Image (cartoon, rainbow, N blue to C red; front, side, top):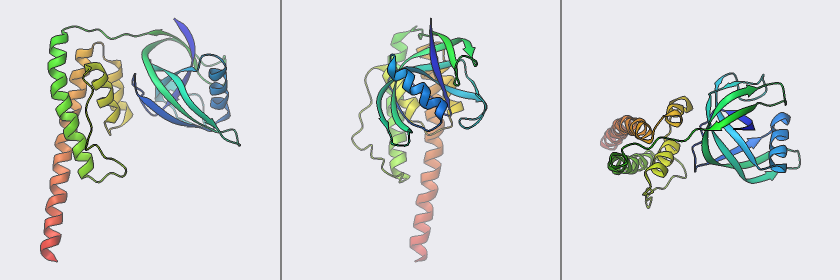
Length: 220
């Protein structure tokens, strides 16, 4: 167990994934400066209750991701842009609100269980196909600066799960159960279910857009 600073935000960070943050509040500037002076580590936690900025310290979910500050840029006015790389899951054992102007917590590592790896590898092939289909749908939806034409999913099932979860364009509260899953099997099932739902919705949207485009072309 260790005590770490906790950064509560409206986002979920997964191990192996990057997160780009803009730091403007003095309490969080202080947190980042201290982290950089020590080991560059901080905990990223999704807000359960409260607001992200300019208010009382919020209540976070109990499971978060330990992150390392990989890059940072301090501006003349003291604000910062940082990139945090997710390392591993943790569970908050005790939350402290009175030691610093920001949250800190006593946390312990929360490793995943790995039962039935053969089944996980089978499911990962299906998830890779769903992920490609989803990204192709995003391209068709003409989302700016997105080009996944040459995208190749990772072979490692856990890396694939974390990448797939990070890429999903859904609210953070729908991603938190993925991070909290007890086993890689449960995590795979959750991510797969979300991709089937999102791909179904994407197919309907793109089909509707195609029909509208054909109708407009016919009218013109």
